[in-house]
Length: 102
Image 1: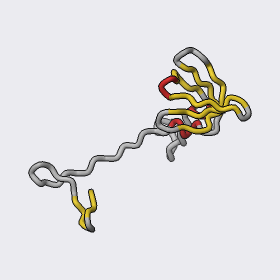
Image 2 (image 1 turned 135 degrees about the vertical axis):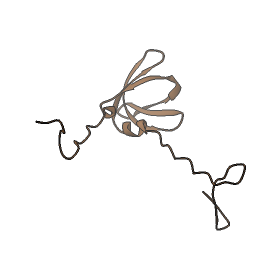
Image 3 (image 1 turned 45 degrees about the vertical axis):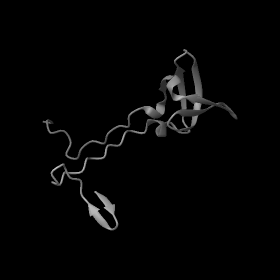
Image 4 (image 1 turned 60 degrees about the vertical axis):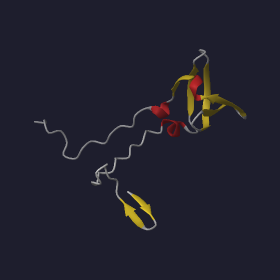
């Protein structure tokens, strides 16, 4: 829905019928999970960089490679990143336990 001059406009098709609004899809924020965490970055040139991720934007990654020494890596040059911060979190068990228990 769009609001214009205090009037709420609903999306409609070419014949003027109301159409349900599209569901918003949010992508997972993996770089946010890496912020201030140690990581190993392998670049497309084959270099492996041990670092701490200090910041990122749409195109670049700021990494601290030693105390006070930073590098700015273009994201397109990264082959992969490994870190313990990327491990999936364990899911809590559902209430009621196992339905197949004897």
